[in-house]
Length: 166
Image (cartoon, rainbow, N blue to C red; front, side, top):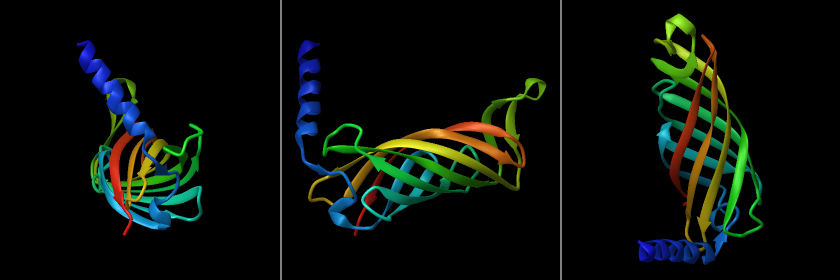
């Protein structure tokens, strides 16, 4: 058991020592890729400068399927490292079809939106890793989604993804 622990720590430390960019891969502005979680689907990222970016996600979700998200992100160097950046920002989500949430409404049970479109806002927080000399970005993000229309509800978003910068 001790050897497995030492092996895992060694691999982790080796990964940390690898050089990565703390901004878009190879200075490219536009990347696309996939994400798994909530939502699951396609993702696009458009950097506006070294610290800010717009992100567009399209996929299926517990909030509604299909679902479209638009976020504005600020990237910051919380680790004081060139390995990874944290990011955070506000966004909006539109879900179509049936949607569910974590908001509990007494006798009626959990929030359910059937049919139509749902509009919500979200706050997202994540970490991205951009390996040096590759056109890739690996990210993990989580946040709160608050459904505003047609009814109030809430849910948690979390996704793991990979973007390619051509």
